[in-house]
Image (cartoon, rainbow, N blue to C red):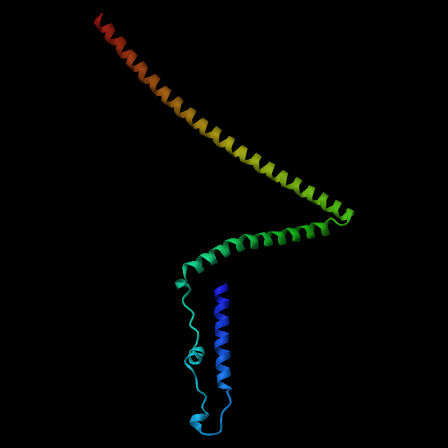
Length: 172
């Protein structure tokens, strides 16, 4: 930030010098001699100041800006946090300034917490019942499927056993 102040001061000096040159006393001899003489430095002073592109700043300036930001950001964040804490403390202080008012507020908060607890418990119980029902339904389907597969396997096994018994009987 300091280079900007230096540039501004230089620009102010240049415009001040140009104003002094313009106010110089005019002699009444001739028009040519009446014109004030402007030196090269004064002419340079009247030229507009051209500020370079911020991307073309020297590395030292960029490093200085980065270091400055690294310090200012946490300081600003701490100040904002302090302001918020002050606001919360002021709110709490005003809210609990009167004992009766504080007690009513406390009781209403307790009731609100209790209602929220009931809601959460009921929601959890419903979710558990849904999960249990889903699990039982899945278990019944699997049991039915396994029972059907066992019945098929028993039927096929008895067919194979009866064929084996017939073969043995035919051989004897």
